[in-house]
Length: 192
Image 1 (cartoon, rainbow, N blue to C red):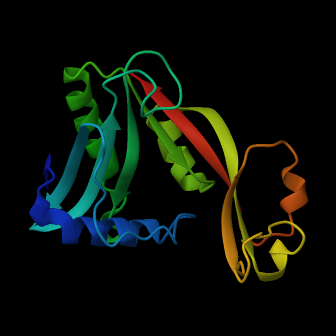
Image 2 (image 1 turned 60 degrees about the horizontal axis):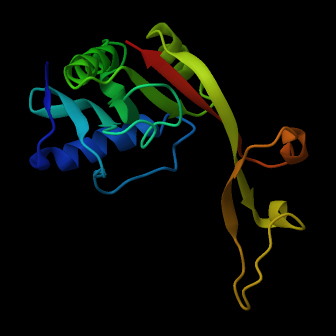
């Protein structure tokens, strides 16, 4: 396996790897049909094995403090995507991608990474194993059908809400316990 910079010709493999990896998480419905591009410089690496993209990491980094990351001092990098193809899990590919991105980040005077994830315990445990600390959280709340009644409404004539995705930053999360999908979105940070 080699870890190398992403190339435009990797896009199909990148999308496949990310989609298959995310299907096993609380982000299962966050499907992309093309690779994201970033406003700021980014570290974009892939892990390749026998011509197949089996892992990826994208880290957008700051040129000015707190323009990409939500906290911290100095210049940081936001991990937007880190994924390992499920057929290649448990081979330390994610760890190798993280360390390779960190090495590149240090060369650019980046002093930390920030990553947001949902409430998948195995994902959070991985970040903790990689020496990230949980530093912030809020909730992703989905409303669908009758869950929206008296909670989410539109003032636009002839517009009928079918489902809605929201961010909840309050303290009364119990009011949404009847919703089918409520996820705690957690921020992890690792300084180096």
